[in-house]
Length: 245
Image 1 (cartoon, rainbow, N blue to C red):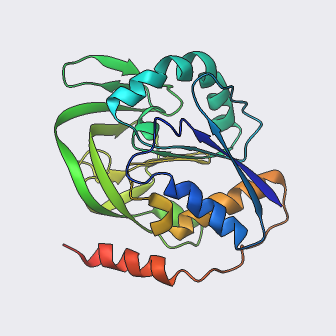
Image 2: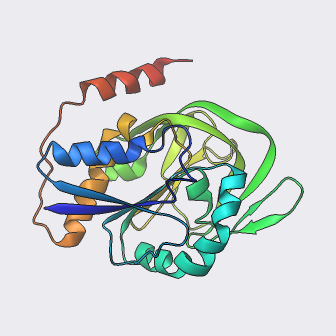
Image 3: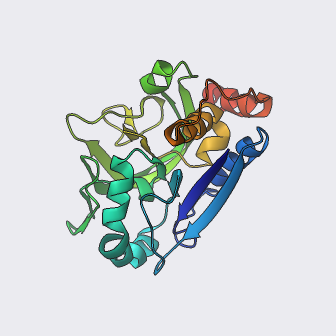
């Protein structure tokens, strides 16, 4: 078995240890005897919708996001949309998450258009949502997985989901998408968007395993359940975040 992972714009979108998400996927594959290849794709390099099993896009500041806009929309956008709609597994964090929506509106009213793949929009507001976050995911519960998600958030953008869009989780502690409606992230087909940095997957091994198993099943692998891994250290970190005030 082999998984091919695309890391989109690793030189521009890599805040708060986001690269740790890829390390987690690679290690959890290695420990189970699954071959894993990670290919970085940045400005000027082509992206094909049928070339990867998993796609990761991390977070970046406004300056870095502005640098990649033309490349993303003019060259990669249609292929990314096709990949999402054909159920390639995606993880998009913070800035990468925001780019999937219709637009990002600055505090001065200027708008940067998004890919419009998922029905949501983001508006910047004064002050930032910063700190540890704990959320509970009905989606993970429906997959018979641990529903608790933990992480670290730091964002000025407030994301508002469309009426028919499913949030990834409901906030227990922290701000989430906008600090008002208790939603955190989004899940659409096999695409996950989240504001959880720090990194997200090392603290949430159940989500990492869902990504791996879903990508393998999409290949047609006859997979009932991934072999168990000792996640004691991750669970200790998760419990600490959940109990901190």
